Figure (tube, rainbow, N blue to C red):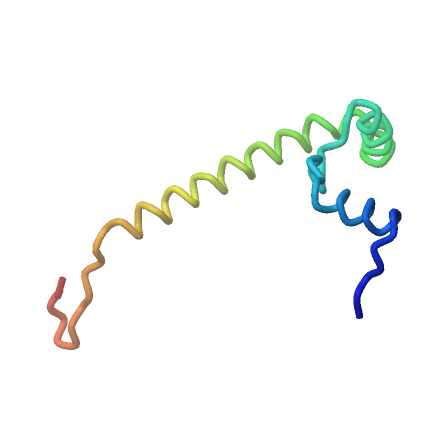
Length: 88
């Protein structure tokens, strides 16, 4: 089945092919205000610093875990033989 070349389909096809804006963009300043309001209402103003601190430590620990995992991958591991001797 072929699409008929009408002006409407040509416009739709050219728009999707020439799209320059990203499909998923970050919220702008107008969108952040309602999001911030909902967060404050859900957690309360006193709880927000604790949540931010916990998120920061979680991100730090995650990055340390990634760094240690890549360090472990770089080092050759010694394989222990059945009789207890170390084999590289």
